[in-house]
Amino acid sequence: MRIKKAPSIAWRKIEGRAFVIEAATSTLHELNEPGTFLWEMINKGTDIEEMVKRTVREYSICDRTARKDIMNFVDRLSKAGMIENKRQ
Amino acid sequence: MKPQANLFRITDSKYIPLICTFELTRRCNLRCRHCYIDVPPDVRSELSTGEIKNSLKQLSRMGTLMLVFTGGEIFLRKDLLELCRYAKKLNFDLKLFTNGTQISKNDAEELSKISISGVEISLYGRENVHDGITGRKGAFEKSIRSVEMLKKHGINVTIKCPLTNLNYSERGWIRKFAKKSGINFKFDPTIAPADSGNQEILKYRMNNRQLTNIYRELGEKPPEAPARRRLDDLSCSAGRNVISIISDGTVYPCLQLALPLGNIKHQKLDRIWSQKNKVLAGYRSISNKDIAVCNSCDMAYLCQRCPGIAKLEDGSLFGPSKIACQIAKIHKKMN
Image (cartoon, rainbow over all chains, first blue to last red; front, side, top):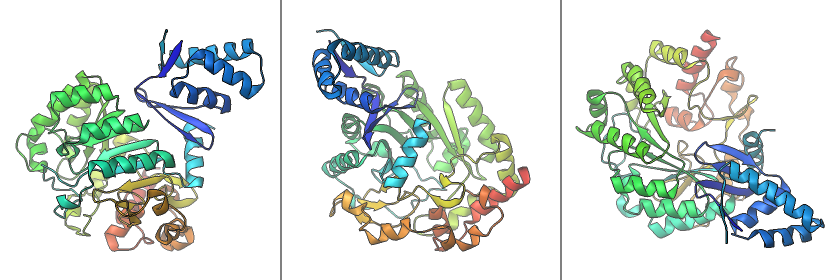
């Protein structure tokens, strides 16, 4: 599965954290450090399998935990209308 | 700390230009009586498409997130949609300020696809008043049509209404129109002197009674006032996390503060914005003690002084601003 940032989303990485604005509601979100790590990969169009691999490496956690955390994160972004999911 | 407060705190302390007002042109098809642009625009000095794109790229690298395209009338630029597309590609939160008379159906469709954050359209009241202020018969009809067209395409529209003594009595109609159309509205009672320093347009400022009524109606907080950084600090965000670029490439700390810091045609933006820029560093170093009269004023805690307007009113960055004093007095009476 490949995830893509919704076109209306505006964002910038400032001092190590991603600040993301939903245009429709003008809501500003501040992502923490792991959230920013994942968000940057989403913005580059990285697929889920690759995101899992890189997260395992970055945070020295097992594949299962990384996958679960990523899917939770993706689910929250999706509910907030911040991403578009694309099945491959 | 809430994300907004944290973002403002970080960018203010690190001098990251979070908010940029980019004036794309000074050309305009209307002749609004209260307009602060009173010098005929020199089209030859306008930035090219390439120069604007290059500046946007630099701004995105420097951390700018909120971007406003303003004019003049921005839809007079043939490359506007191209610039909007480019800005969104760079992940800016993009808003457009326009008089709404030049927006075509195709423009509305394209803007919807580009997913801009919103469009603010200037509207001064009903047809006779609006056309009278803008100096163009038919302007009202075109602006209203644009409001409806943009709304139909799912674009956030806000009616922006500078309030003067010419349209003071139109505020009720504006409110009702916005409510009926399901859009936001903003009143701005602060008419600034013209860029040239000409004070002639100040005759359109509302009188004390009118201003008092406006603030009573709007509640206690002054609308659209320049953001005070802290209650104990008289300075604003200009030159810290607010930047402006005008149509010939000159960089200002804020669109309202005509303090030339450099020009993007000849210099890199990060150099212009650096503490090594003596003009900018000097401006950033201004503290309460430099604004002596205001610092000792017992209404300072209520004051929304804009240094740019203060400078335009009497030539000094350090003095009080007449309109800010007037509004602070009104708020003191109301409290």
